Amino acid sequence: MIPEPTIIVEDLSITYRLRLDRSNSPLRNLLTSGRFRDVVEVQALRNVSVQFNRGETIGVVGSNGSGKSTLMQAISGLSPIDQGRIRVSSQPTLLGVGAALRPALSGRQNIEIGCLVLGMRCEEIAEITDSIIEFAGIGSAIDRPMRTYSSGMRARLTFAIATSRVPEILLLDEALAVGDRGFRKRSEERMQAVCASAGTVVLVSHSSSALRTCDRVLWLEQGEVRSFGDTGETLEAYEHYVDAAND
View 1 (cartoon, rainbow, N blue to C red):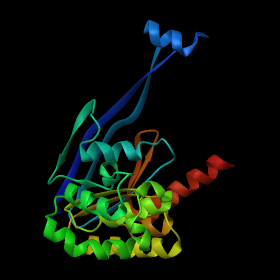
View 2 (view 1 turned 90 degrees about the vertical axis):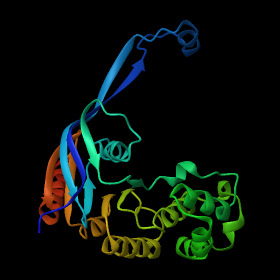
View 3 (view 1 turned 30 degrees about the vertical axis):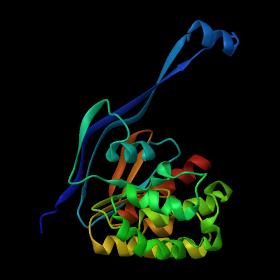
View 4 (view 1 turned 45 degrees about the horizontal axis):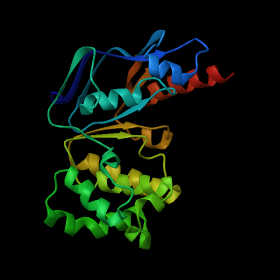
């Protein structure tokens, strides 16, 4: 069977430009004068070319600052690109509905907001609200303002909302790295169900157990593709690299 691509990234490069001042002038003087002496360029991605196919779960690994999150944001359309192009078969859903959620509102109200962002109708939201609450393990706190939640509670609720509908393309950035062992197990089981239903899942994670369930793994380092292919081989090469760096 010929693979059906859902995401094609071609020669993608993204550079961030940061303005710095290396003088000893107080910050207030710089702000009033508008003088910043240096512009530092940080190349987040360099000539990245990859293709993800329908029905695949792709794992993404790399050291901190390797460009993993930048790639996810670029694929979702949230980050401008300097070079290359990205083609997708449908609008990707980035596990980032948290950006639309409101800390002053209750968890229940935020479920409605998050599901609306995902394109659901009010009738659909009413039908799945209880299952979202149960999966997130929020309990009676669901009617408290989200600002009172711990970071783990917020992350669990965000994950439960974002995976309550199976999109064609789902991007998960460190989504399984939160919660206790029980929640991580439920998260992995839900991701297996999402993958079995349809579409393409791209998973950024430091969880070896989650990554080993992926069909292929992409290893990014310093904004470049180090390896992309067999899950076991790529993870083994990455782990050797990390071990050597820590020696």
